[in-house]
Image (tube, rainbow, N blue to C red; front, side, top):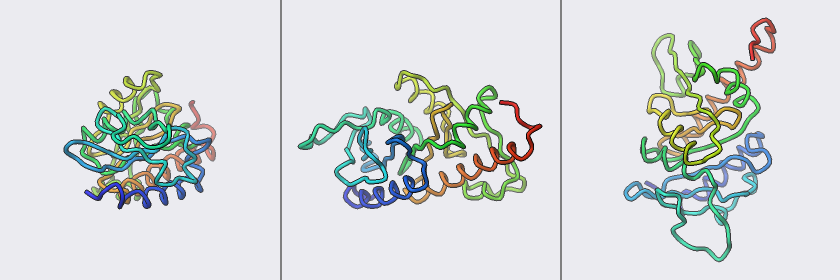
Length: 211
């Protein structure tokens, strides 16, 4: 794995891209990249950071329990949702985790919440999620937006799988991951296209609306 020093500028650049797309409104969302796999340590965005203006100083290195490993000269705290990232790293040995809040992913998480998953089939962009089979179909899990973050982390961890690199949290956003920052970003882009497509499809065919 790359070192924290190597990955920090790349994560900051990616954060700027996500911010420019409006995927991290009002300092929401959190991003991380692995530093070491064994023992697990990862660099995660600090609480309250404006991701569109992220700098390496806004990244804190934490362990599997989301505890800060190196005390800095400031009083920054890691994102409160670092525990969710830790669950994903522990279960799937990912290289990066991206959590964003978009209008489309929130709408889809609400629309399909009762079903517990959003079923997507036949889309060319499923290839970006490593599904190359004919008429590929995936189920994107949806979990409740638990107020208790340890409960949320457990729910996301239980729902996460290697075959679908993302979990929706109802009215909260998506956690997407990959074995690198690049693959995590590719997966996130694919998911967000699929969410936007579904919302637009239902907008264009009002009779299909059933919120």
